[in-house]
Image 1 (tube, rainbow, N blue to C red):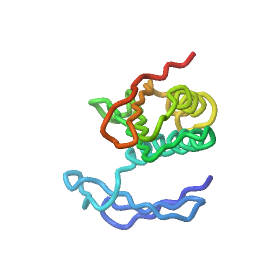
Image 2: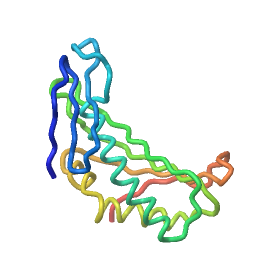
Image 3: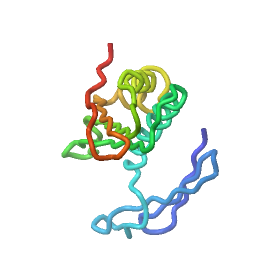
Image 4: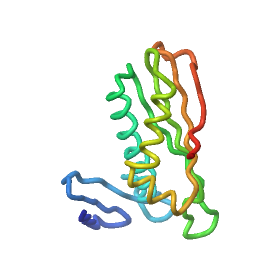
Length: 152
């Protein structure tokens, strides 16, 4: 993988990787930016969410689960002092659908965490990552199940 970052002036940068999609980064105005793009550490957290999210939804689809909506939230705590690294994270999977099987979801989360998601494998070496889930009925109004994935 190759990443190229171009400075656009101020604290603004544009980054592009092998895929060719350009991503804009900037800083908050209190530190000299113009707030015109995501922060670099937001991309790290988004990478974690996207990586595990793609794994989980792909596995649920292969398991013929009837998913109508799927979200992944990553809640990250950062150190108070510079360099203000991530100190822990909570990944929350919200699955909405008809008769979504909890064991299928747990297996999908397990496979992502233990086998497929390189972002999670890498970042979990630097800080603890907790994995929780909620299954919502197809109408989006009733919580059916919630729980936590704990590695074996």
